Image 1 (cartoon, rainbow, N blue to C red):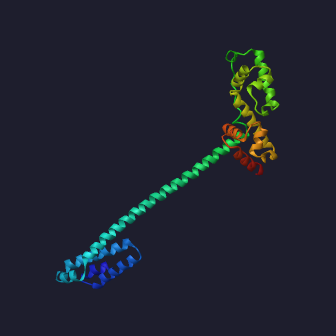
Image 2 (cartoon, helix red, strand yellow):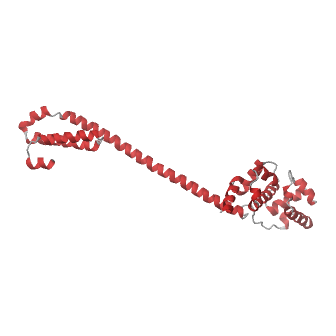
Image 3 (cartoon, rainbow, N blue to C red):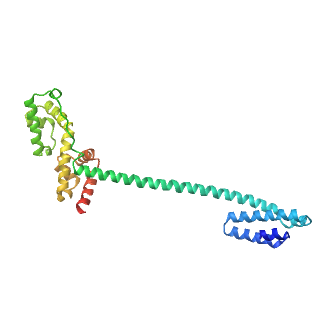
Length: 263
């Protein structure tokens, strides 16, 4: 239609009517861009007509209300601006939504990967057994015969599962080993690199893990029963000690262990 007007340079009312039809159609279709496009085309057409056909200017001004069109154009521009802002906002929300979901995915992916690594280390006793460094006699400052007696006694204590005794204290163990509390505490600190409670709990957790690995029936026990079997006075202290040494809950370890046994 634009080319038709440019070629003929003749006032053709049908062209304007066609644009008006396009405006109405665009409005019904909620197509703001096209509605604005044809409003601009009418304004441009009227401007050219006023310029090219001065004799018709009065008739054109009376017949066609361009002021209304200009107001319509302003409203459309405002709507378009709001729509664009809304689209930008939606784009930002979509972007941050994708980033957020990706973040959650990678968080759980690496968390699961870390858990698998911890689980494997726990199965291999790597989280519980640490290398012991050598100490000089001067550091220990305990007579050799006493030291040997305590070290041998601890070895026998571990082999016989003496650590499973409930409410076991340093005094009780020192008495069983024929030594005093001070020497026993020092030997455990130097050779095992742990305090007495941590030494005891480490042995108990290691015992529980070994039984869970090798005994299906034991894996069906309640946490309360497992804690009693491992020498703990209550399930809470067992769960806390288990998490301290393995960085996972007993229930998590058992669940993962069942998966490996079933596969």
